[in-house]
Amino acid sequence: MIEIDPNLCDPSAVADRVPDTTDAAFDAFVEQIREEGQHTPILVRRHPGASGRYEIAYGRRRWRAAQAIGVPVRAVVRELTDRELVVAQGSENLAREDLSYIERAHFARNMERAGIDRETILRAMGVHRPDLVNYLAIAESIPESVLATIGPAPKVGRPRWLTLADRIKSASPERIESALASPDLAGKSSDDRFGVLLTALAAPRKAAKRPRAEALKNSKGVKYADVERNATGLRVTVDETVEPGFGDYLAERIPEILAAYKASKA
Image (cartoon, rainbow, N blue to C red; front, side, top):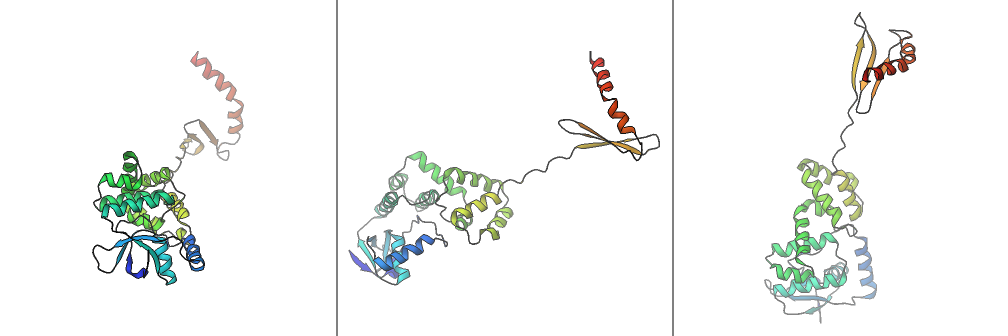
């Protein structure tokens, strides 16, 4: 175990975390490190592409906290292959169980994009093949701009991400861009930002169809009634300024009209 200048460390090339600028828990974590010190070391390897630097397998939050405070970060240095690094990274994530659903999906996709074989990804994530397929499908269906706006959304599980993915697929690029620029996102937590975008991308409600109206006119061409038809019935509205008393006359004879109608059907 050694102490390293945090400015000499780089995060793993395969990102697992989704940044969240409104993470109040991280601010509290920094204060805890400041007051109590770093209890658990991070795991690093010597950077394969930069002499004198280190690549982090896990412990990025502890590294960021040390960087924010301006103190060395305690680390264990091991010789790790690329495969060993992502397996160690994934194993630590599983042990903590604090990665959100979308962060796990993000991690799986980043490993695949980095050329990590499927067997290693399965081992790193501790999942079965169908689960990995689901993670990859979700990750590919959420654009980077949407993920960057939402953040990790720790309380949002797969079903709601699937709903958001479907709405993104149905929405125009202009509508997505407008949703991402919504002032309603300002100052909200990651989970709440998810809710704002989910609502903004919901299919607009179809306006209810107005009943079809038909005007009845007298022999002089003046309208004396409106007949409105819809799926459940018919409404007659009499204009008594044109035919005074006709409404009462019609209402009194409805039973008679109904009887005549039934007789015609017999």
